[in-house]
Image 1 (spheres, rainbow, N blue to C red):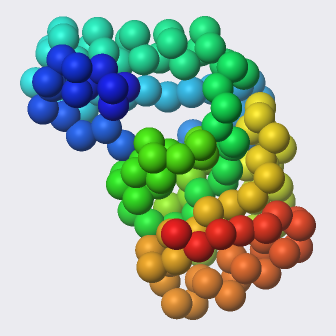
Image 2 (tube, rainbow, N blue to C red; image 1 turned 90 degrees about the vertical axis):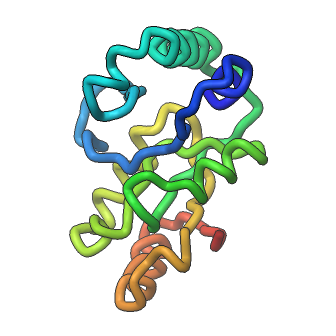
Length: 152
């Protein structure tokens, strides 16, 4: 989406959004959204970009060299994780924003890993985007499920 946005010179922010529909869904799912108001929804050029990017992502599934990771921390729309994905060979499956960390347990973390179709080999923590009291809990839960992590 970011490449098409630049090519067509659209004035939109492209961003990963925190997971809020799973990992409880039982089928592979991807969400792609265009804005949050009727003005954006009526923008046919932007809608075309979202549609093309979604079709491209689905049709090339498994062909991309990016490694799937789990993102934890930061805001609901995570610019840091988006930048990492655009500048590296990492792709975020699930993203757990900071407001959801207090509700997190090992089983939910495990589901985030297991229900990502690609193999998730580590987590990326938006370390500054995790409240102080949540940091030891996240580290303990990741250790409990055996998932290494990097701090961003």
